[in-house]
Image (cartoon, rainbow, N blue to C red; front, side):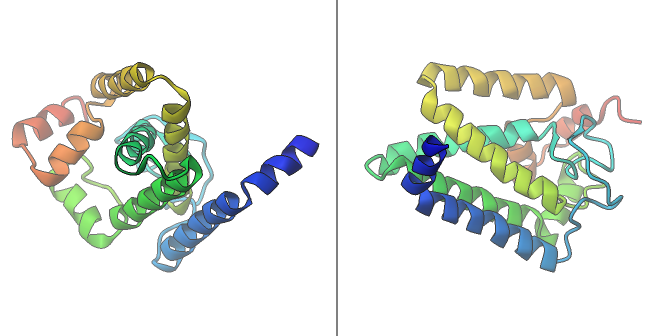
Length: 195
């Protein structure tokens, strides 16, 4: 009990900022019309199919791995550019970046872009639950990078990217590529097997 109290005292400011980021992101998305639990209104821990209407509506899905990688990359980037800033502030900044991405990703312009040029033809945006979970998983990725050796982080990123590539024919690299510079042959390849 005392160790919990000491932890809270030590990281009080960080905890308050993290709570603020989650509450603010959730409120902005909710008041922008995002569904809390997705179109079906049901809570779920996992959705394994990228073709399902429940994709991006649950706590976790195939794209959760991309958000873990976001956190790992944010850790590396912030270590490179502001390594003298205490880690707790870099952590807050990483979560804020991820929250900003979640708000942008769920804006009509990006949702329409996903529908037009990626395999996410029926994408309706994330539920509030999924967006907040994505931020949490980015935080987990940040912590993995902080407490792992560099080569472990690199190995994990490669494993997650290759795993998702073979599992769902999509990953962070392809997602960024297709969003910014769509390639028709990649889109056709990603759609193979979808009925």
